[in-house]
Length: 220
Image (tube, rainbow, N blue to C red; front, side, top):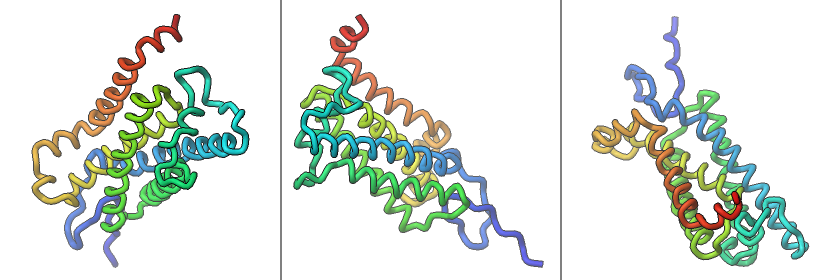
């Protein structure tokens, strides 16, 4: 009678080796990819719709523009909203990227083990997205001086994705055995939610400090 197959997981298995239970970030990663991909995709689609409406009608007021501080119309019509030029909006990059993330998350939830090349591609993608998002944060906060609700959803999603994808790959040895065996990685893997929470809290604190007067005026 053939042996029962090993339970599937997000990380690769070594042939013939006993399957160890996946570490904390690896257990959570399928859900992080699925939920984060869905949330990011919805935000990117909404932003794309608002951007198209603005392109067709410059007098259109986006639904996410509620006051001088919370104004995605200013963000969507800025030059930084089309880094590739030619009127190609950044939001379409989000639609494509988050669609891929969502697809990988659903596959992982179904027990499909993601191949190493796919995981390397995902790692590169989330790191590129993380750098891009922090550039957008700087533009929004220090150049435009306004906040976009849908953009902030994307910021949070990308941070969480980057933390969980990187931690999972680090623990699984994809980033090198020395990295996997380091005390720092082991500690972060144990407290895998903490890095994401602290990172997002830092962004929230930045917005609170920079826009302190505007928040106070809104609450007055």
